[in-house]
Length: 311
Image (cartoon, rainbow, N blue to C red; front, side):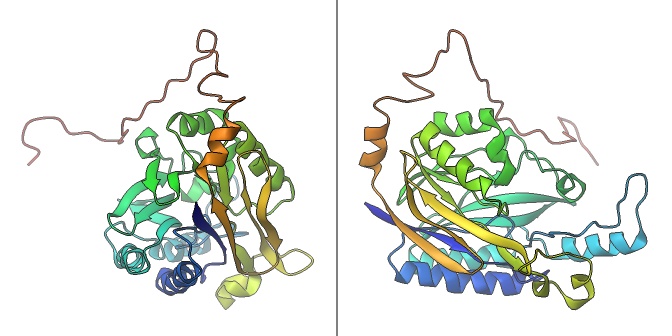
């Protein structure tokens, strides 16, 4: 039995350093409550630019939009940078494994990523979002199959699928095939329908599903950008909806809307084994003679240098 936490909170707009400080406090709170694993939302460090257009109507880009992108890019994090180092140190100090949504700068491209941070081993895994959704493709690059790991944690085998990637059936199957036991879904999707998706995945994969969603108001943006975004009738840009679901689709905690909070639940992997008796979609309930998935886990850089002297 292991206690897990799902953190529902919002970024400090365009300020990775301040958001990391906030994350450390939330991780300490989760650890003090006994959680051995804490999941944070999509794009938590670096921010999800809900409502911004970056001045990019079809066929045109504006100077003001490029300035927005510059500010956003400066708020991204490097894997060897101080923000990730602070998260690694906080995980070690608290003894809590962390799954953290970040905007990662790799070279000159930004990625929507999830970090796996182990209290003893540090950064043990990286997930880059394979398919940014809609206008996200303007500001984020596409991950490849080299960042699809499922890793060991104190709560069980952990994997992360980010926001609408959860609507990619083959990606879900790749996670199930790696033995994911604690399926993390960092997101900014606050629709009521998201709850049905999370319960479906728990039932389909016979796994615990931990979905962490941000909360965000217009006031969380710097004042000069706040007028560019339109909140809902209650003032929210992202209203939350974090949830924890058991391997038979039973809701263990949440969903909670309209506030920052931490949800907790106990993970008993024996419950997953019991649930697999009658459904294992990559095992006894599969039909590999009819259907087969092949996953390419090779890195796919745009430029590869082979042999010789590049000088």
